[in-house]
Image (cartoon, rainbow, N blue to C red; front, side):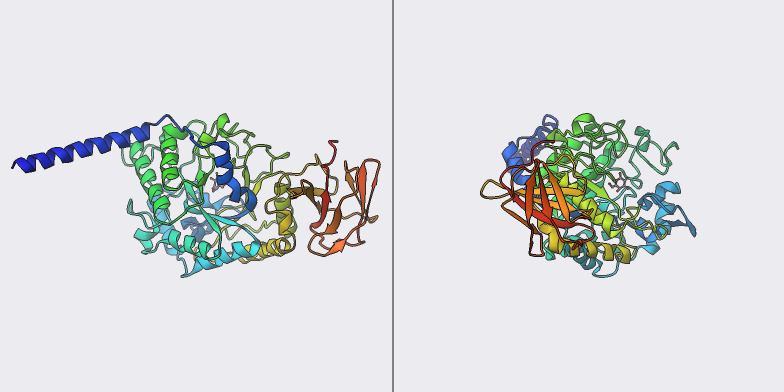
Amino acid sequence: MKTNCMLLLLAALFLTVRATAEDTSSQTPAGEIKETPEQRDARMAWWREARFGMFVHWGLYSGLAGTWEGKAVGTSGGMEWIQNYVKADTDTYAKAAFPKFQPKPDFARQWARVAKDAGCRYVVFTSKHHEGFGLLASKVGDYNAGAKLGRDLVKEIVDACRAEGLRVGFYHSVIDWHHDQYAYRLSQQLPHPLSGKPYPNGERDHAKYVEYLHAQVRELVSNYGPVDILWWDYSSQDFQGQEAWRAFDLMQMVRDKQPAIIMNNRLFRNREAGWASMGTEGYIPQLDPKYGDFITPEQHIPATGMPGVDWETCMTMNTTWGFSEHDRAWKSNETLIRNLVDIASKGGNYLLNIGPKGDGSVPDESVQAMHAVGQWMKTNGDSIYGTTASPFKSLDWGRCTRKKLPDGGTRLFLHVFDWPKDGKLVVPGLAAAPERAAILGHNIALESVPANGSLAISVPADAPDKIDTVIVLDVKDLPAEK
Ligand code: GLC
């Protein structure tokens, strides 16, 4: 009896101590970061070097493919929002969508190969989009691939990416159109299919949803080995951060499990987090690290880059993120390649999206486009990976990226979009002859003559690559400011 009492007492003491410890950790001053700038640079190094990643939007909406009750919901715009466009409650939506979401075995292998073939260094895919369906096998809730399909699609995708040597990240929506405690009436700005309507199931306790969100994210960062990126989506000015998602605690939990992880800024919507407004073009070039590691311009390339800030432009290949059978507005290979170059020349990363179908297969148009980018990268990848922003304000004929050379000089990569008709490429601001001038990947050395503070490079009559021929120039001094 005595021993029993002692044991009970000890157990009670242990539980109290544990509970207190947990409480304190979730109450740590909001978002304080202990990392030094050097540690941060080391953590960000692979991402800055990579420059090019593949985004994947895939979920129940993929099988619906932009069609609801036999009719096209639209021919453009993000069809991963279809549930919201047709204002379907989650049961109606699930009933229509599940029969059309039938992942083939081994679909993930194709994704990973497409990414690899394109020259991407990382893949970010939707572990859960706004519709709320998780691709993981989760112990919390039953709206996930484990519960509904008896599969862990997150594991399948992660394994396939790792097998191709790719880094991997999760896009995770904090907005949730399924969960019965997600209190959508707390925000006027975040979308929800039932917006403006009363809760169908009586009062909601948003804290319960947040608990669920944290529990599922905990699974994501605990069960799949190293996770390289967490790509949150998204917040509004009227609902964000600690208040909406217990965001600082969420980020801290993720960092505790994955100290090297890189996260975006979308758990927040305020100026310190790089957001000036609700529009996806409303980013500003500043980011306090407590709000995330990088800024996320969407479908936009910042005109002059964002010096001193890490940023990544995400873009669709047509106009939708999730697959739509009605969207045929595919961007040309020229546009995709030049966007990649434009972004690199401004010091950013390019996250290019594919939207696989309901069976997981990648649309042929995307396979071909990614292959075309990859072909260009095979010859010219050196002018993208590990480069930094152009030292030129602007160049009439194209773009420039650069790398430091071990001898202290600089390697400039001149990306010529408009090939000169007179056989002379004029580079402003370079007063001295370069150490070396050549066409990248073609082993063609070029003559050049400095004149009047510019350098005139003699080039062949025809461009070896009509989309972008890259000329390598090794120089001692950077171009003079114009
Ligand atoms: C958005 C959209 C979305 C898409 C995305 C990509 O804010 O809501 O459907 O996933 O961001 O950047």
